[in-house]
Length: 319
Ligand SMILES: Cc1cc2nc3c(=O)[nH]c(=O)nc-3n(C[C@H](O)[C@H](O)[C@H](O)COP(=O)(O)O)c2cc1C
Image 1 (cartoon, rainbow, N blue to C red):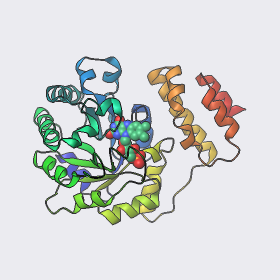
Image 2: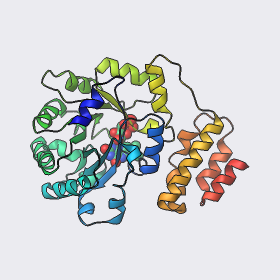
Image 3: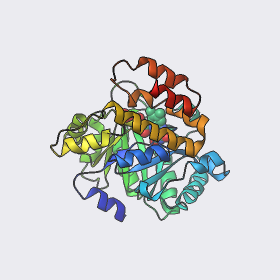
Image 4: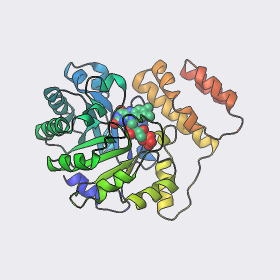
């Protein structure tokens, strides 16, 4: 309770790094934190896998104290599994447990988890309640507007979830059918926030990709915080840029040498955490962000994308 009271009752309002599978692992979260992300959340973790003690999933719960406040995000479709997984996650002592009711991916929704629950708001409320009751930590929810364009029950759902005790809600302004296409619609996020019955923090998410847009959307829709996903991939500087802009300062675009430095630091931290091979593969998602708009970068980028070892990546920057 105290955490969210403190976080949301101060200026400037907090910036969230969105949970992203195979992106927001501990090394990247730490870098984002250093560049001004206030709150970070783990990648989504399967409740069934946690219960079966699958090491890959268990490892995803790891975080260090310098990441705090940090949430562990779980997903699932079965009430007792979700509850048990929440207890397992809570034993790691994060600052909060986040439930993923927004994932649009087929293998998740086909089982009734992620955004599929939006087709059954009663079940969504029942399962969430059971997690709220199972753990002493604050529970938050991350979700979408609804399943499809003709069914966007987010205003009622947010109220019902608030009533059973969640402490904040993050809303991605798309339906499941939209996946990631089109533009995020923030008007319904604004409606949730401006519903006079709502008193928990509402975190807006979707398409925030510049300091100007973050400031504009925060003001226009009145949300308590913004959450940034894709625009942070390979671009942890975005958090500091948003802060600087918000406080009336100009913001810096990092130069090439800073980008290389942070990218290599990121790579090395990934290698230390997951081994060279995996680090090299997972870093491929980040290069477009790290080296966006760098002129004459094509050849180096090709080398980075083809590299199979950490040494080859270092070499690509030397050549
Ligand atoms: C590669 C990738 C992985 C994602 N994984 C998760 C996840 O594990 N949990 C989750 O709640 N959302 C996940 N999302 C959704 C994001 O958290 C976010 O809601 C979405 O990208 C919209 O925000 P943005 O426009 O700022 O990227 C993922 C998105 C991307 C692009």
